[in-house]
Image (cartoon, rainbow, N blue to C red):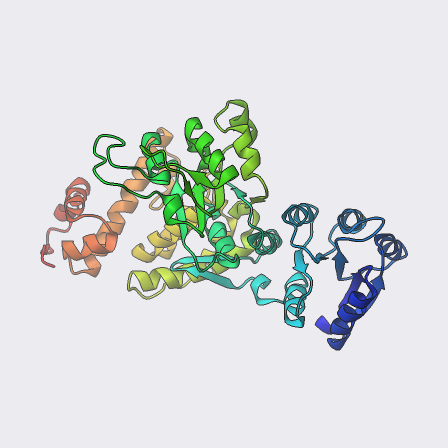
Length: 467
């Protein structure tokens, strides 16, 4: 309960100490005070176990950062909010790396203090595990301790204009986290752009990022601004940064250092103010050793790192993800949402989700289209080799001595055939409508109908090609 929380307030300025203490006692917090870091450490040594510490950064003797480090050593789970008269980026980053929950710049209003305390003590809406909407079909969920910690760190780093490196397996939600940082930052009302460095060929990526002048290369008939110009004053996410060619990494390093660059084919310098976030799932030490990733660029991007855990390590969020995504997906495809039975939810909880959020969304999409709960559960059942099954797998298929590629292909074909048949039945065998439901071209649907023999097997139906 908020009223019984114990707060240790540490500040060497008597006037500030009295002011903050008064603000806290108005809300019935139990307040202990200390005027030095040494005194705060002594109180903890004597048995004080505060729910939260408000700690000034600049103090004589042991300063706030040293006190923070020692407090966290004595009580690793202790929640600490740093207080400072100056928003020193270097000290903010250092405090975050030492485990600070938040950072508050003096002077502040009571509402600001209340918000920081509520979030730090887990009483704020943003850390309650509720869905946090960021954009159309983009939402952030923090139900597990690991994701609550990341949410808190994202809120803190959002207000410090430094590069952030986002790490994690493919599909863990690095772009969602980048959007969250942008939304919580002072740049929230400006542009957010994502560039997938792996999706654009190296020779085109430079012009994509920095733009070009007429005649810069064959086909360049007019000037074109790059993503950095379009994103001025905003935030840019460089996804799959490890796939960027080394020569281009050098140019990016220059932008990070000087906030300026030249378009291809131009000698004019363009100055920009862009917050850079970078994401990757590569093995960083290996990439540095093989020169795939420039060491100087890495250390520039690595002002602060957030590592997203895989979905298998935050299973508390699976039911929330399923329910919210089902509602959104059903709206998008104009279908009634399907029930998520205890049996299906348990199968999802037991699955390891090697493809993380991307795999979960694809699974849910198949379930929504097919509408077959038994097939969905079967898809998640482990095979004899310990891997998950595929939609349409049967017991006989799982014991088939044939190769794994043959098994996977057979399961995929059967799942596709069932999805196509289901869509055709729902549209009274109208192939154009079925193609729209399945999100494939009309020609692709005709090919697959012939491939799987669906037209012949269902010959007693009259197939319609009309809209």
